[in-house]
Image (cartoon, rainbow, N blue to C red):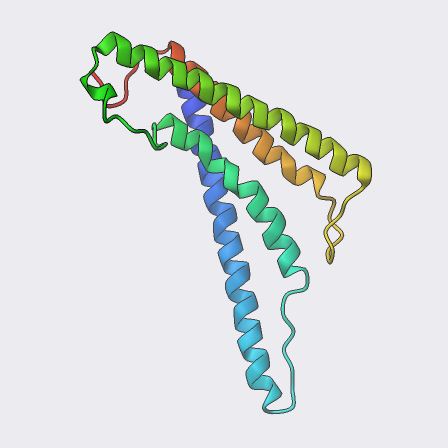
Length: 167
C-alpha cells in the first residue's frame, strides 16, 4: 500500500512539474510576444500576444499548487518544530507524530470536502473563464485528488512503522 501511495505522490509531483513547465513556457512566449510587439510598433507593425494567456495561467496555477502536497507529505517535507519534542522519550514523540498525522489527514479531507462543494457550485452556476470560456469546475478535480492522496499518505504514515529520520 505504501509503495502505491508513494508512486501516486511521485506521479502527481511529476504532473505538477510538467504543468509548471507549461506555465513557464506560455509566460515566456507571451512575454516575448509583448517585447516583439514593442519593437514591431516602431516599424509600423504589431505582434499579438497569446489570446487567453491569463485564463490559462490562472486555471493552471489553481490546479498545480496542490499537486505537490502528497509528495511533500510522503517525504515529511512539511515544517515542523522539534525544540522540546526531541528531548522526549520515543513513545511520546511517536504518539505526538501520530496525533499530528491524524490532524493533517483530517484537515486535508476537510479541505477536499469544501473543494468538492466549490466545484459543484461552479458547475451549477456555469462559471467559465473570461477569455477562453473554459468551464472552471473541472480544474478543481486535480486539487481534490491531491488533497485526498495527501490525507491517505498521512493516514498510512500514522499506522506505518516506517520512520523518517527518527529511530
